[in-house]
Amino acid sequence: MTQNNLIDNLTYFVRHLKSIKSPISAHPGFSQYLSDIKEYYIDAHAESRLALWPCLDDKTHETFFDKYYFYQDTWTARKVFEIHPNRVIDLGSTALLVGIISQFVPTVSIDIRPLPASLPGLTCKRAAITDLPFEAGTIEFLSSMSVIEHVGLGRYGDKLDAQGSIKAFMEISRAIKPGGHFLFSVPLSHTPGLVFNAHRIFSKQQVTSFLPHFRLQEELFLFPEPGSETDVTKLKEFQFCVWCAHMIKMDS
Image 1 (cartoon, one colour):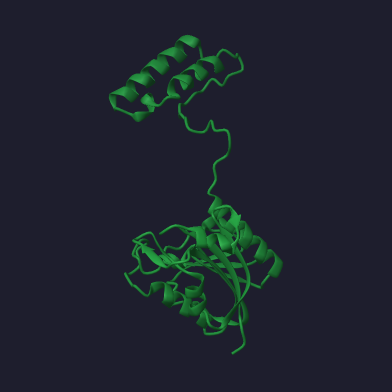
Image 2 (tube, rainbow, N blue to C red):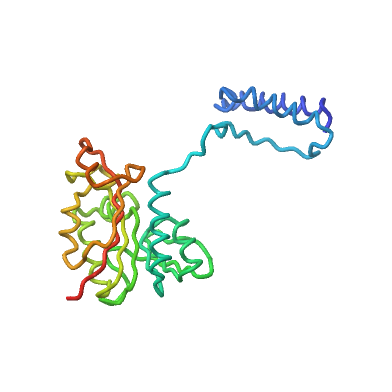
C-alpha cells in the first residue's frame, strides 16, 4: 500500500467516524493511532492488506485483571488438583474455571443458562441450583464460586425468592455425600445485607448456620487481595470481601 493510498483511506475513515458521531474520533489516543499507522507504513515490509480496528485503551502500565476472580479461581483450581475427585459438579462458576478444571478432572457444569460449549471432559446441563438433578448423598465434590448470593434476585432470569440462597445451600447439602467436598464463595461482611438485584451479603455465622452438617476445612478472604478474617470487622456498611470456603460434609 502506498503512502498516498494510506492517507486517502485514513481521511475517509476519519470522515466516516465523524459522520456517524463515533466517540472514537474524540478519544485522546486517536490522533496517536493515526500517527502510528503512518509511521508503520513507512516500513517496506508492512502488510499490503489493511483493515482498521482502533484499540485505544490498552497502553497501560500494568495488565488489568479482576483480582477477586483471579485469586478465587486459582484457589479453586488448586483445591481440585489437590483433592483430585473422580468428578467435579460445578454450579454456575465461570466458563474459564470449569473449562480449565475439566481438562484434568471430568466436570459437569450446571446452570440455568448452560454454557454453549463443546469440550472433552466437560458436560454442560441446564438445571436450577435449588433443584439439582442428583440423588441425595451422591456427590463427591461440588463447587459453586460467586453464585449462591445471586439466587432468587432475578438478575439471571431466575424467579424472585427471598429465601433463594438458603434453598440453594439446603439443596447442595442434600446432594453431597458424607465426606464429600463443597467449595464455594460468597460476599462476606460482619453484617448481612442485600444489594438488589446484584447480590446478597452474608455473615460467616449466617452461612455456617445454613450448613450445620459441614465442617470448615480451609478458607480465603479476598479484599480483593488475600487478607485475614480480622479485616472483615473493618468493612464499612455494604462493603464486603469475597469469602472462599472449603467445607466437608460430616457423617450423619
